[in-house]
Length: 99
Image (cartoon, rainbow, N blue to C red):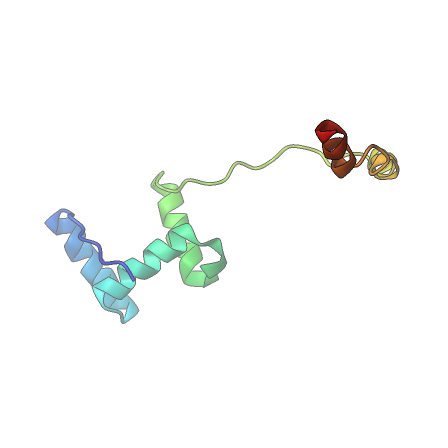
């Protein structure tokens, strides 16, 4: 486990301690849970979602872009699957190159 030294304004530190107390946690445990909620979507739960929403509103949450790519047509995929593996095997190409 890593140890981290963090410098924050006194006002911020007081707010962190107050938030931790409201959650019934130490400031260290609270900060660790906030960092986990930010970086691990699987840790969600109601509390994690609330933290992420606050960060999102503050413009401090980097979200993955939503993809607009469409899936390839099923017929195209089937045709590619039928063609796959019909060429010369790599091991044959390597053997030919050594000869």
